[in-house]
Image (cartoon, rainbow, N blue to C red; front, side, top):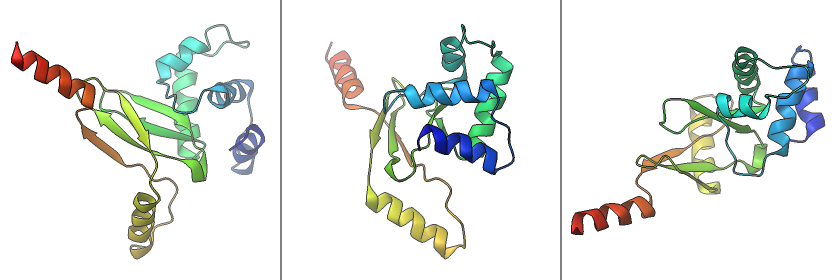
Length: 150
């Protein structure tokens, strides 16, 4: 989704494109693919924004943008949410290490095809597909094996 599509998405759903919303969307558009931000991390990046954006506004805006499908809200089992730009067809899924909380992104048409087939069977209109596989990454497994040897 490009910048125009995200602001048009807000307008088409009856929401104003405020300077704060526009600035938050800009941050997500400028992120490198694979970068996920928490509300606090986003707020830190916005600390010098003009007009200023409070942490409360940051939380409200993230919630709104996720509800509208412009951002993806992700839970990596850390006790808080992360967000990334919803890129539609190029979205990906996540492996999440429960030891170090590192998310590893992967794509898989078969995963999305299976999810769409289940949704269709139950009459659901798919807005987003999020598969999270929780486990222990290779680096943490090696660390645990080394610790066990010592």
